[in-house]
Amino acid sequence: MKIYDFDRVIDRKNTSSYKWDNPLYQGKPMLPMPVADMEFAVADEILEALDNITQHGVLGYSIVPDSLKLLAQKKIQEDYQWETELEWQVWLPGIVPGITLACDLFANETRGVATTIPVYHPFHLIPTWLGRPLITFPMVEKEGRWTYDFIAFEEALKKQPAVFLFCNPHNPGGTVFNQDEIDLIISLCKQYDCMIISDEIHADLRIHPQSKHICIGQFIEEIPSISFFATSKAFNTAGLGGCVAIIPHKSTREAFVKKTFGYMPMLSRHSIDVMSATYQHGSNWLSQLIPYLKQNHDFLMDFVKQQAGLDMIPLEATYLAWISYDQSWGDLPERLLEHGLHVLRGEQFKGKNFIRLNFACPHSQLEEACQIIASLSH
Ligand SMILES: Cc1ncc(COP(=O)(O)O)c(C=O)c1O
Image 1 (tube, rainbow, N blue to C red):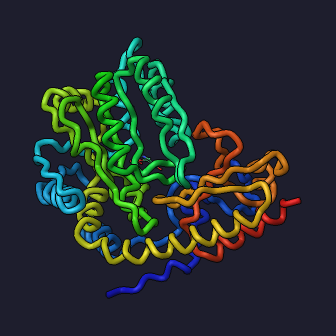
Image 2: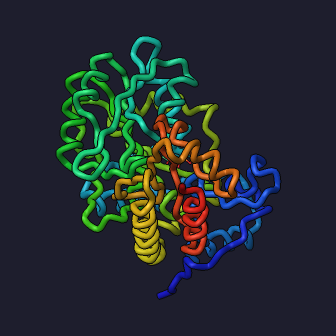
């Protein structure tokens, strides 16, 4: 069994990296911890799949083979004991375009889109891009984790959104929603006749040992639902994209597929073969990644707790720390940027006085980030 070295620092500069070659830095040295990709090389089997394509040399159009469909079906069955039909699957190059398309199709100018805040920014931007009403409700801290303010959620649903966008595990905040929360979300959405679109891209990135990911789509019966799954986030192949939408409801699925025509490019052979390799061989790499991320998480938590005016709730999943700062830190993201550390500003996710820091990096880089933060303390 191959042992992976996540401590290895890989130079990503001049690789057209969105993170490292950001024009914002203007060539200045920068430790970038914004967008959600990891600093680690992928599993060997993924590289082999890519090598095979290179050796073959032909890069024509591709179809999603039945073998990949069966692998996705098997994973859903094994992870959730959810028996899905192959015909429920709709394969797409990315989740964000899939959600955009669904909101365009199922929401309208009077019945908009509900989502919680803070949230992964496309969730609140998509309705705005499409000219659909955006209805938000806040997350609250309860018993040491972020969860919904369910009273505010019901108030939001009373405004009659057509679509509720659910992010589970949640980005940012790392919540893995439990069965009670899932049941309540379904019963409220059913009561207010609101479709549920669920994004499960972070499902395999559970770092809290007790957290169990529950797929909401499995329990939805009387309202339409779309559940998006992808291997790209947990296996660090985000640049290749690829995802599957599970849409059990026939007319919803047919309308969705029709809407993709002319808009959605086909999946590349690279993304298809990489997803196949990941489903079949990714578990060794992932089983080593998770404890590494957990160690980084715990290190960061300890660091944050020692800094007056900074706070963080432990994550159940994801590698995206959601850190609050008080006034004594001034404009923390801006100050960090000036001192060579790029993190995302909470406002991007509609969270005020937060930063989102991506700790999926070699430990040495995380230590360096903490040193930069500490150097700005008062
Ligand atoms: C919750 C969530 N959904 C979707 C994506 C991106 O998905 P895709 O690249 O398939 O559009 C991200 C990326 O960080 C994410 O955090």
